Image (cartoon, rainbow, N blue to C red):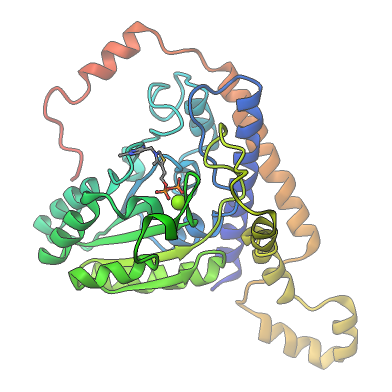
Length: 351
Ligand SMILES: Cc1ncc(C[n+]2csc(CCOP(=O)(O)OP(=O)(O)O)c2C)c(N)n1
Ligand SMILES: [Mg+2]
């Protein structure tokens, strides 16, 4: 992977963490109403998957979707304003946290109903297959969504019609407070895909490079028309299910263990490791420095200062988004009527 791409991924992970933590603060200050489901701990999944996707691919996500939208290129401003229920939000303030949408980026929505993403993805996949386009749909869902009837119905149709769908399970082990082994006889989600003859594998969802590589390979095959695949990303959420949940059902030792696997800090360490420190450079001598340079050329590398700059930059981006959201007006009745009129003429969403 090129340095530039790795930097972009690291930036997005850091932006995601800062955005979500600031949203939590805004919630406690009373700027965000309703439910707020946050993503810290899971950043490597959204960033790894979506950096491996093409611009032409469609994304369907759940209610824990702010970071998917961010990485897909929706501006922090338009997402924060949507969380605040303001008119400049990506859904004009009428969707809120769980219903981000941006057709221009093929971000086909966050969905609040568990198991709702599969049939939406199947519909889009069918439209792509009919047109024989080299495009795919990425369908996110949680480990708690695999016992919904729509899971098996949709996997069956996707396999039968060889639809270009990449099913991505964000297995954070919990469905609100219920751990996966308490609601699923088979707790390895990827194994379920074999019932429909869909290739599937488990991926370390705390490692952004592993997520990226597994997704890149799967999407390459799907774009060639080989049919659907499923990736189970093993991950963890550091916060409760939503802002209303303190998450006391989880043992502290478990949380601590996953904190040590923090995907954002791990990506930073990985990037730093590639860069020789002053002592290593001195020990290597002049000739070897050139050799080092050649060796590192084109690899991901970063300095502590660059990480610090990146941190300041993402914090500014997030503060700017909050100011924008605060200044944005509330939607009025006319906005509501406009929203009702939307698509009255049978507009085609998938071209
Ligand atoms: C059909 C349906 N049943 C129940 C709910 C209530 N509910 C909201 S989130 C959730 C848990 C889903 O867990 P999971 O799929 O693992 O996603 P995570 O929150 O862990 O990302 C439930 C049961 C719902 N939204 N929709
Ligand atoms: Mg879950």
